[in-house]
Image 1: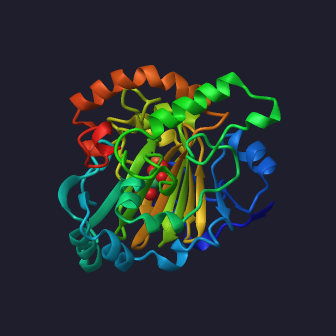
Image 2: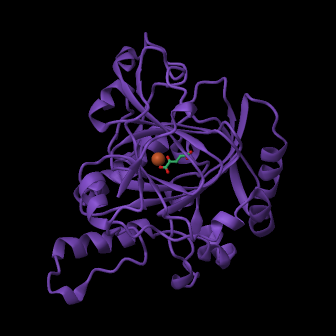
Length: 349
Ligand SMILES: O=C(O)CCC(=O)C(=O)O
Ligand SMILES: [Fe+2]
């Protein structure tokens, strides 16, 4: 494993919020780590990283473009996230959503010249795209760095003689919960991932405000087109981000990091932020519970996949009963419609 130095000239440290501490060399950029190193140094230490060399053979690197999405998915009905970048943006209020065909959104992305507006297909379930055009599943592959129960191809190894019942229960639940909803008619082998995988297609400037992923899952964010600026806040600092209730279900910061109001959110001034830039061909590893905010620096296409493994399985399992309460709460607050445009989790999946 080699740790490469980050490109300092691309940093905008200081523009985020002048008084917050922004570290620009905290996120390692690692090249094709071994499973052991990755598991030891990043998964178990819950340390974010950018991994290079995982996507070199992905056909997506050649194929994916706005035109490719127009050709294969143009007539998909989607909810487009229309962002006004001069408004307050927090997760739960990332801007309006409008139902349209994906082709209409791609037109908006292409012709946008207003720096204050951004257009986003936000976290669209990949399984729906694969059902529409099965060839998509050939374009990407999941990193084989640590066992991932949310990867539909992952199988517990029955033959080793070390079958762990907790692991099998977790695996069963992961498959049941992460793969439920939608796409029942699709042949399983063509659907390499269901709701565990989501697609992001957007214009320069899209913002995903600070959050930690739902149900303590970790994530791989594989960047195919364009660059994304990524900010991180470690889980132990969550109070400085003023999370909404049910933080473990879905961590949603109430402070807008782009223009924080320190009278409402005074603890934000003590936050330590880690910043890096994700380039095409690179995969961002976001550990379980780690807060992150992401801005597109260019027109961007990314594929994100959730991870449930031994390090976060317990957290994930204990979220399941709480999920129903959280669902009621989020429904009462406008639900996931404010994050992905979907009515609620079931509609989204
Ligand atoms: O790229 C984005 O806009 C958000 C990605 C994200 O939050 C994730 O993959 O978990
Ligand atoms: Fe996320």
